[in-house]
Amino acid sequence: MPLKTILTDRLGLHYPIIAAPLGRGSTPEFLGTLAQSGAFGFVALGHIQEDELRQALSAYISSTGGADRFGINLVLITDQMRRLQTALDAGCGVVSFLRGDPAPYVRRAKDAGATVFWTVSGPTEALRAADSGVDFIVVQGREAGGHLTGEATLMTLLPAVRDAVPEIPLVAAGGIADGRGLAAALSLGACGVWMGTRFIASEESGNHPEHKQLVVRSKSADLVETTLFDGG
Ligand SMILES: Cc1cc2nc3c(=O)[nH]c(=O)nc-3n(C[C@H](O)[C@H](O)[C@H](O)COP(=O)(O)O)c2cc1C
Image 1 (tube, rainbow, N blue to C red):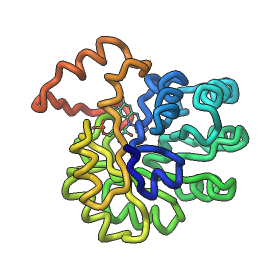
Image 2: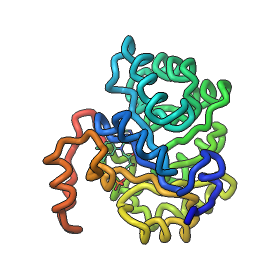
Image 3: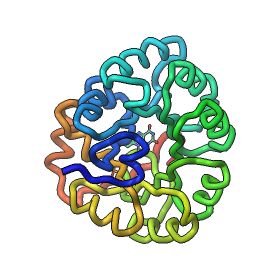
């Protein structure tokens, strides 16, 4: 049964479920399967060479059925304005930013008519995101896989950000793996979930088979936190 929220209305989905960017795991096949099932996925563009980006985006447009049936993600630890412009020129209508200073990128994307997500780790950053004119704020708890942006867990962070920016729709990220997590996120004030680790284990993702098996075999106490080479 479809579940309607502002997220499903805005992106034309059946379910308020977003697959977070998963490095090279977010293949055209993976994002295409999500689009066909009424959900939505993002691809991180940072690992795609700038001169190959146009061609790579064509593969995603063709597998998902349209340039607004998937999202593009940029981690702003280096200048990504050219990649953003290439994606906007290709018609990409949904973009997300993590780290760095997204404000100028948000302006460029909004000027092109895109729907914009900004991942935050606390109320102060959420206020900046709201001021910049984003459409959705992704609230990332420290349970999240990949680069962490903050210290607080999702259960405490989500209500705090909800209170700080009552007018902006929030999407919950970090440690959500099934419908119970989705229900909890909705009851804490989110309009959908942004799941990464759980989707690594999906058949269609391009992640390494051993990586998938490790995710499937892991228990709740198997979390490991390391320092990343570029911080976070
Ligand atoms: C393998 C992997 C790669 C990721 N790469 C990115 C990325 O490039 N950009 C980004 O904004 N978030 C990235 N993330 C973080 C997700 O956006 C998201 O916050 C996180 O996966 C949510 O927590 P969960 O993994 O517990 O579901 C990545 C996560 C994983 C697991």
